[in-house]
Length: 151
Image 1 (cartoon, rainbow, N blue to C red):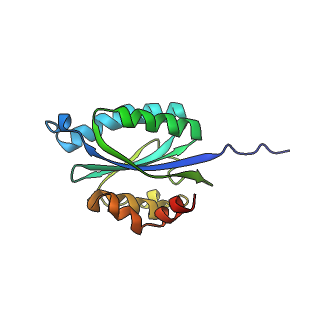
Image 2 (cartoon, rainbow, N blue to C red):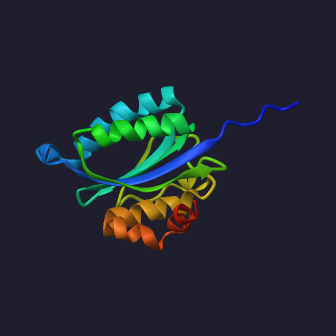
């Protein structure tokens, strides 16, 4: 008899840099965020990708539903984020970024080949990059928007 794998959830959101972070270079702010999120995500069994640029963040979190929900609640309360908007929340059959506690790309970085190997990973990378470049409205043109509407 095989154990049934735990259900997974994916959340995709966008936010803007809070005014209180403008004294930091974007790279320093991202390093600060990653320094906190990576160890916490490892403990909470979360994986994901953060994309930043133009004063905006777009992120996906994947993992056990209770952990994803709890982490998203913390992000909404984080003073480094402003205008947090949930774009997608739904069960997912597999992780896109299973080996990354929190992968990171700026909107200008080249996409490493290993980042595009997960289930729907490349489509998700491009969706997040589109949101950073074009704002939340850009999410409507992604396949994940249709999934969110169907859920």
